[in-house]
Length: 453
Image 1 (cartoon, one colour):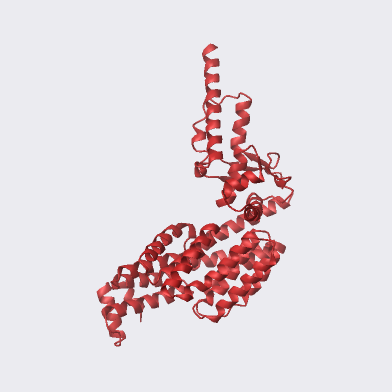
Image 2 (cartoon, rainbow, N blue to C red):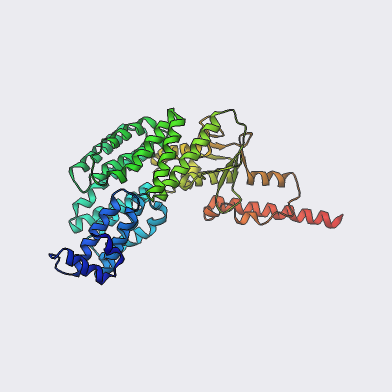
C-alpha cells in the first residue's frame, strides 16, 4: 500500500496517503505517517528494505514544513545509516554533530535525542573524551526539554566509557551490564540492549579480553525478539564469528565470509568493510602463527600509513593507534610512556591515560600481527618498535641510506608527505623538518661531489 507513495511528488503522496487513511487531518499528518512507515522499513530486515524506507523518510521530509523538524530528521537518517551499518560512523559523525548542536542552540525538543545519538557514534569511533562531553550536553538538553527517555541509553554508554578508563576493574563491567538490562524495561529502547552488548563485546575482543567478549555475546544472544532484531543481530553475528575464530579459525573465517555475503545482500557496505578488516586480521594471525619469514613493511612516506606483508596490503591502524605508531617511527622506535601519554592525551589525568595506553598498545600489536614478544614492547617505562627480520619501515630505510651516503639525488620531496595526517603534531613536525634538512644536505653533498669530479 505504501510503496507507491515513494514515487509520487510530495503533494501527490500527501493526497494519496489521506485517501488511503481518511482520518488523516491534513498534509502534515500525511507526512508524519509516511515518515513513521519509512522509519519502520529502514529498521526491518530484508533486501531493499532500508533503501525503500530511507526514500519514504526523504519524501516525508519534503512534505513536512517545519524546517527544524526536517533538520532533526536529517540527523536521525545519518545516525541510522551508521547504526544499521550502511555508512561508516566516521563519514556521518560531523554532520550529525552539526545538526545536533543546531537543535540544541534552538532549544528544540529533539535536541537530546540527536545529542544522545551523537554520543553513541563518537563511542563507536573510539572518540571517548568527545563522547563523555556530548553525554553531559545531552543530559543538560534532556533536563531542559523534559525528555527523560533520551538520557537513559547514556547511562549504559557512560558505564562502557568507565570500562575503557579502568580496563582491569570488574565494577564498571557489572555496572554496564546492569545498565543495558535496564533498557529492556522500555519498548523504544529495548533494541539497544543487543546493540550495546554486541558492540561492547567487539570492543573487548580488540582489547584482547575474549572472556568478557564471550560473556557479552551470550548477553546479546538473550535479547528479546522484535521486528528490528534481524537487522540489529548483524553485530552479534560478527562478534560470535570473531569469538569462534579464536579457537576454530576455519569455522570462524567461514562464518565471517557468510556474514559478508549477507551484508552485501542487505546493502550494508559498512559491515562488509568491517568484515574485510576482520578477514585480513585472520590472515595476519595465521601468518604470524606459522613459520613464515615474510617481513611486515610499514609505508610512512605517504599521506597515510599502509601496511604490507608478503605482497598483501593489510588494514592500516587508525586513530590513537596510528598516532602512537607515527610517534614511535618519528622517535627512532623508542619513547617513554610519559611522552606517549602527553602526545596522545595532553593534559589528561595520567592514571586514566595509562589505562587507555594499554588498549592502544594491544590494538597496535593486533594491527601489525604481532604478539607481546614481537617488535612492539612496553617495559621499564619505555615503548619500543624494533626493526629487524620481522619488521621494516620505509622512512627508516631512507635514513639508513642517508647515513651510508647512498645516492639520494633522485628522491622526491618525500618529507612533505611523511605523516601528512599528523602534520600538526609537534614531535612529528620536528621529525619531518629534520628529515627534510638531512635529505637536502645529502643532496648538496652529492651535487658538490659530482661537480668536483
